[in-house]
Image 1 (cartoon, rainbow, N blue to C red):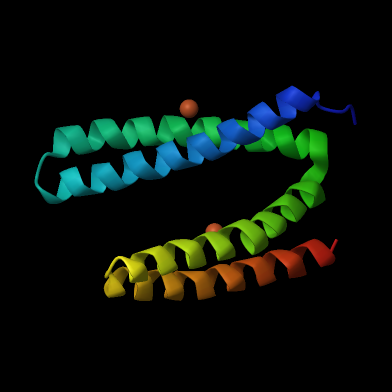
Image 2 (cartoon, rainbow, N blue to C red):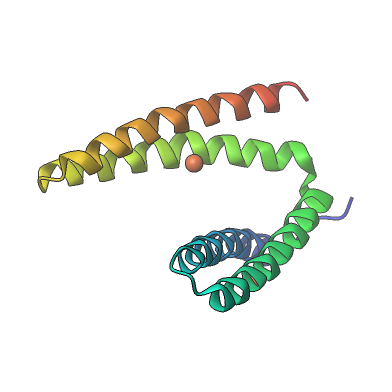
Length: 128
Ligand SMILES: [Fe+2]
Ligand SMILES: [Fe+2]
C-alpha cells in the first residue's frame, strides 16, 4: 500500500468533512422545502445533496485504500472522544451563561450520546 502525501492526506480529510456537512445541510434544507410544499426546490436540493454524498463516499474510499479501515476508525474514535465531547460541553456552558437553558439541556443530552458513539468506535477499533 503506497502512502498518501502529507498535504494530500490533510486536504482529503478536510474535504471529507466539508462534503459530509454540505450533504447534510442540503438534505435538511430540502426536507424543509418539502414541508412548505415547494417540491421542485426540494427535489433540486436533494439531487445536489446526493452529489455531495457521492464525493464523500469516493473520498472515504480513497482514505480507506491508503490508510486502511483501522486507521480511519482510530481517527474517528479520537475525534469523537476529544473534540466532540469537549466541544459540546463548551457550547453548552456558553449557552447556559447566555441564558439559553433549553439549548444547554439539548447539548448536554447530545454530549452523552457522543460519549456512546466514542465508546462504540473504541470497541470497533479494538476488534481489529
Ligand atoms: Fe462536494
Ligand atoms: Fe459526533
